[in-house]
Length: 221
Image (cartoon, rainbow, N blue to C red; front, side, top):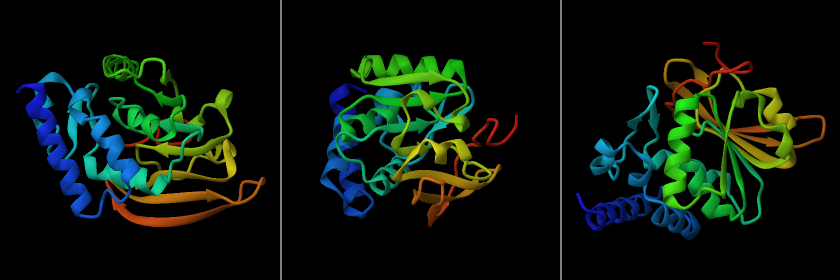
């Protein structure tokens, strides 16, 4: 399928998400239109990138369904200039969307080297090589060199909110993280840091399904 046709189908999906009230803000809509998902999936899945469901990517992982990404980005309330850490790079798509919303360097951690390299290639082709920085490591430990963060967005399901992520968050900042079962069922939590001693306020945004967050402060392999 040619690029023009892929993009037309992508535009229709974005319009549907807006009509359904999932994409609520003009800035998230604009980011989705600038960063189509088909640029971040394996070649054989490009023709399915406009379908609103997860798709396979290397190392047995998935790229999230567009509606789920939109929900998390709307809840994140990203503004230009915010310092954002993403935990779970995957394909690199979400990190590129985050960049479009904050317009400053984005840091993203991926534990699987093969997947980190896949994301780097995607990001380079899409024009984000020097804008999104992919780190290979244990995302449950965060990334202290660039802390504190205004936002931390976690794209895998954890048994609990990792303490290092709370520590690396600014007071008033928030973490979006799925918390619950290892077996693809969690609840999407919005964790707002309310004091320097790491006290938080938590809002529950309902059931979601993500791959498990593996690491010292997540699930063990």
